[in-house]
Image (cartoon, rainbow, N blue to C red; front, side):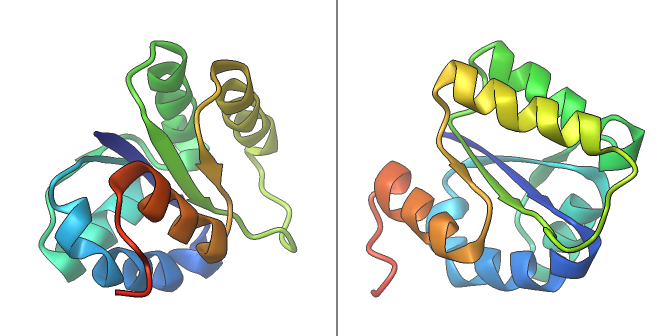
Length: 126
């Protein structure tokens, strides 16, 4: 199972906490991340990640291409809805390709829990 993990700057702490909470099942997955998010996850959890570029430098587009090629099974993208992003067109493209390719997409921790439960077969209340 290949899962993409992306988090805007203000939500990177939440992403690390999310990954730590589910490290036992995520350790069995191939994790694809954008640059800084992946660096934090690897350093703080010890999990192996396949880091792409940082979002503003094309990382969202790289992950979007993987989705378009059917190489990603699910996405947890902790988005900051209150802060404008310079690379908003890239973010929109990534969200759109998830819809087009019918790839499960979580944009907050609550829906991320559903990805863990649904795709990875783990009850988040364990």
